[in-house]
Image 1 (cartoon, protein in one colour):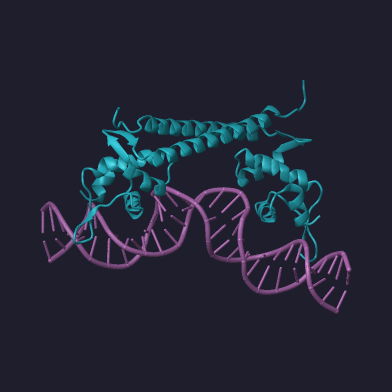
Image 2 (cartoon, helix red, strand yellow; image 1 turned 180 degrees about the vertical axis):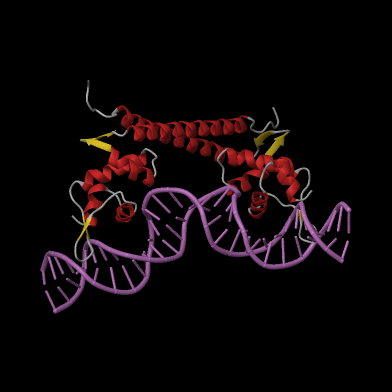
Length: 121
Length: 121
DNA sequence: CTTGACTTTGACGTCAACGTCAAGGTTTAG
DNA sequence: CTAAACCTTGACGTTGACGTCAAAGTCAAG
């Protein structure tokens, strides 16, 4: 299939698909005209990419992660131990980000709690 | 005092201080030479800006928020009801961001839980 | 007077994953 | 054969709070 169809079948924009290729996440063949030709297997491949993006990984990380993952019919699993380590570290960073946001929210709550110590009728 | 001293006293870079002025958060006087002249009151003023930045507000928001806040010796409190509403809304958005990150982390946990269904010795 | 510390205004760089044209080939249905 | 749909490679724009020079003026001390 060509890029338009892959886009429709995955819900991912053509621009994004070209970007993924540019970043080494996809490697479609080419027609003599230059048109990209994707295989059916690229549909789940794109899905995998989106899962990892949704997991907060960057494309560079994903490029390294993909060769180390198996896809048991939708269930994505890491195989290389170093990838597992990287994912764990990443999860920890997300935890820290959550903590920061919660602190931020507490900050806001404190400000809101101090709301206008104006007249007490 | 001039910008260098304010920077040292607040721990905020000179670049940031100029940026805050550019965005209307600070209004230092000027010497004939063009040098910025800050008052002592600008030290806590900068502190207030950092608190709001740490609360996740953007400089544009802060520019609108500052005139509506009182600073009871370090305890920042909003006075305008619309500002309170904006802060509440912002807090809600932070809550949503936290939810998203937690979903992201859950995603990662799912991937990690699927770790290598390899050999079972 | 001079040197070195301090300051000024630009103005481009950063980080990420694309969005959004623009100009120009390719394919295909009719 | 032709128009419509589809595709290509650039290349700049987006978002925010600054970082990082660069060229040049100002000020304080000796």
